[in-house]
Image (cartoon, rainbow, N blue to C red):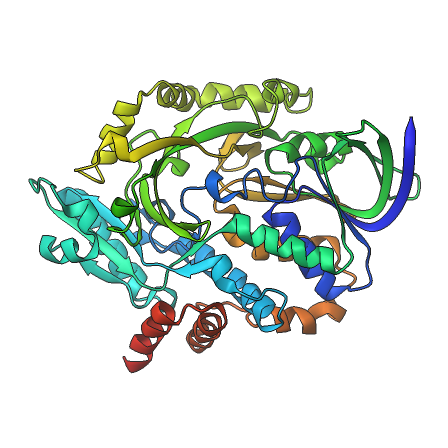
Length: 506
């Protein structure tokens, strides 16, 4: 029985950081548009955006070694690091605009300054890190980065990691003080609170069960009220599917040809969380190491200071795992139900290619706490089991598709927007760096789906994002201006401005 039928301009599926970002941007660009948000859980940002479902956050390619690859000739390819850092700068500009416009009042509710570090051991790894440092530090986006292979200096930088360490091989680290810790769960809630104040209709505990095209080109959603069981029909000119792992199923139900042949591979994660505040106080940085051979990129070990619930926390991970669920709150049949006739060959090819990865993930699931503690002690030699608890992180669904470079069934580690040719519907798939590049990704959605409005919207977009349509790396002076602006507006002055001033003095 259909209890209700409504029409609106925009429907956002999922109350995570992506929908919250897109909704906020559209409300600035088109204030009179009616927007409705559907979320099947009871609160905003409860799945992948939740602060306890991410170990790191604040991905700016300052410390993640998998974004800088050593080429066969020994040189370091920093192109991916540049791309991700530029995208993170776009996010910071938008957040600074929100603060300057009083749309968000206290930036410390979601962003804090924090050094980002890379740490390696072994002669070969130290040589790689030195070359990486030389390649990055010559780039204006990464100026202010330091390299150190002196254990005494490293003891000052990272005492918790250096105490009790046996130094029978070379050790080195890089540090850059302009890093941040971002609480995307808190930011999501702040953005949705703002949207609610702007008359955006946010419906929690409403599940989108189906989606289909109408004769006039709009989209009709079958929405179920989880509490009452009542079924409603909601129609919109534009639909954004930002439901994390749940996006793939809804994309498939839409039937758009752009969604054909695409599959998903779920990867779960676990973290060790320090429950001893005295230990947490001894560490103040995000420190990334190198992933084990054969491990997926998302399994790069890191020890992170985090600011959650107004207190300092310490997280180590991630330990990879496997679950057929596409969401933490999903079904054990999610993976099976995602296999369709149009993506069957692609999925089978991916399965054949990734047997070692699947075996690795299953082995990770079987690890005991003591085995995980052994891995943690590679970072924190004196770690005690009683000071650390195991926590299950969010589910990530990696995109599987056929590509010219990788062939049939290529597993993609990244974020991807799939949109209809006419721009009436778009879905966000994939994972890291995800949330950190949300503003860049949503700008891409806006460009793809609203090309007829872009010219009129450009002045406002440039007000929100001063570097819009410009390459930061080709405009060093603009980088300095943006660093100073975002540092001032987001309260990052201690770290950001010090780095900027060092650059200017040089």
